[in-house]
Length: 376
Ligand SMILES: Cc1ncc(COP(=O)(O)O)c(C=O)c1O
Image (cartoon, rainbow, N blue to C red; front, side, top):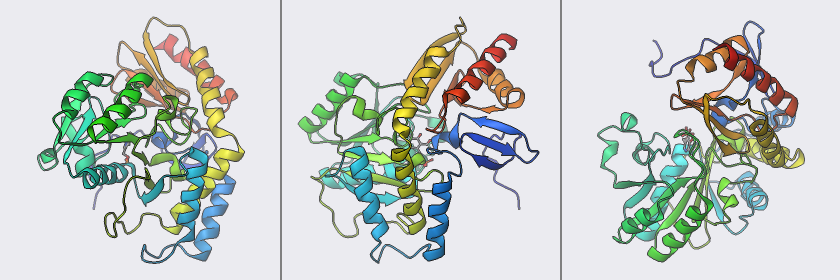
């Protein structure tokens, strides 16, 4: 049997990793500024994380959501403390898409309505509802296209209000910072308008923090730059540093009902042990502050070049936009300089480094970036 061929692969086989460094099967070392697509939050194979997972595996790896699991309660308490959402409740699942799916479902249960507003250039995942909320027709099958979704322009509060006024909108979903769509930061004022409008028209504001959350932008959640409190916040990626895990934070006004949401694997012991270790490391190593500091350092020291048309983002969620395809630059960074970076669209280098990136590692990137810019 062969693999279903849906991924474009780089010719690199990582076999070992630590912190922001990855080694391939030939012993070549790479600097990781991509974090496996924003997943590696506290660094690869952090000893405390490895110990937590190993220790938990030796006790019990899995049961089901029909028994008490104190690790889930501990995790809810800790996420509440670290994020400032102590009064919210937590539902654990397995991925970002599943979190957005659950958020849309909960908004619909809560309001009794069935239409969701999303934004142009959005990405919310690939399950049925999540992909319908994603503004990319190439990945929406006819089966997914039956959901009632309306796309508005980011930062256009009047456009959102016109849709909300029709009275059938269950929720508005927006990324803390649009990631796959090209690092577009919603204006703080716009997020505050969304909060007010959702309240006014009885819709739920859903903040997709799957990529922008968990400290990446220098606050625990990107939307906290705007000082808002959404109805539902969705999590994934960095929450368990690579162990599959997702979740949603739910405001106190939502009423739970037995069986309303559910999952086999969500909130299992191993995922919880990983997620608890991640929060401990984020706090003791001050990684939220570090993400902001090193992200700003990169922004300040990027080379001056007419070819760079814009630099966007906050903390360690950065996009460097060009007026041309970045494919040659990214290839040169990977194969000549041994640095992993991401992209968004064809013209943007996207940096999603682990939150523990050091300034010395940023310097290595800046030097290499200068050199490939001069050569390509
Ligand atoms: C903002 C956002 N939401 C949701 C998802 C989907 O997450 P997952 O691939 O874990 O389902 C992603 C993945 O890139 C994302 O960037």
